[in-house]
Amino acid sequence: MQHETISDLTRRFGLSTRTLRYYEQIGLIRSIRGSGYAYRMYDQSNITRLRQIMLLRRLRIPIKQIATLLESGEAREAIGVFAEHERGIRNEIDGLQALETVLQVLIRRLEQARTVKLGEQLTSDEGIATLIQTLPEESNRLKEVRSMQDIRPMERPAKLRDVRLVYLPPATVAASHFIGEEPESVAGERILRLVKETDLLARKPDVRLYGFNHPNPVDESNDHGYEFWLTIPDDMELPPYLTRKRFEGGLYAAHMIAFGDFHEWEWLNEWVQTNGEYEYRGNGSPENMFDALEEHLNTYTHLGNGNMIPMGLQLDLLIPVKKKVEE
Image (cartoon, rainbow, N blue to C red; front, side):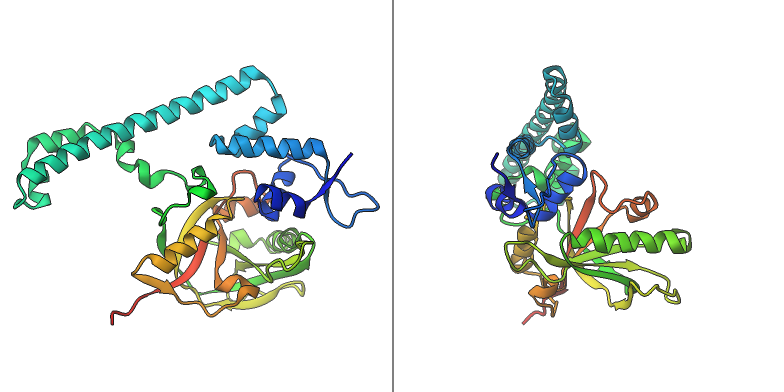
């Protein structure tokens, strides 16, 4: 039976090694480690399963439901999931059509009264106000809340609609760094060990967890480094397997993703390069992802449950920025 390496699959399916390892961690696929293999290998049944996962993701089926569907294999269960998803898509389409109608009416009204300001038109024209109020709350926000994971990579938007500007406060951090196979797992286990040994969550319930490649993958083995930064009290003593560092914080462009959608780094970087108001302010190199960070969201709960990468994990992608100086 033919087997393929993790590098083969990343090239074939356009997925990152972190995504494949995540799928394996939550039980969607499995690898083997034979005595003659230096790296993880996947047989044809798991390659087929990965292809099924990719197809279901293209249908915008959430990972949790994909796991349920593949585990069950029952047509009845699949029909129920697809029907529920279809109803959601239909509601979204109806909301967008209603929004389109209201915008068309508003454009025509403004064209007929070009000297009237928008604010005056909205507040003085009862017909316009009534039309807008007939829209359901969600339809006013459909384009804002639409997840970027619902857009295929080849349909990359000109700019992200959900980029936020966030200020990360300076902090003392416990750094966990490892280079080699599965560096995220090794470095993450050290973070979990610290949390358990020191009762950190009771001492610092506002804990935050950042991470970044250090260094990035450099060859087909995909061996690379990863470093976690966990915020800690300034006076906290650290065990020898961790390093104390100072995170200077600052302004960042932020975009939230579901774990695994790391191709969206490209989109966030494009926003930083083209938004016109903010620019990159880092001094980093490819070795540390140019000072960009990945922040684990809902860290308090995940660390409390002893799980670095739970199913449904969400991350903030973060690129350091500053406001452009007007020339």
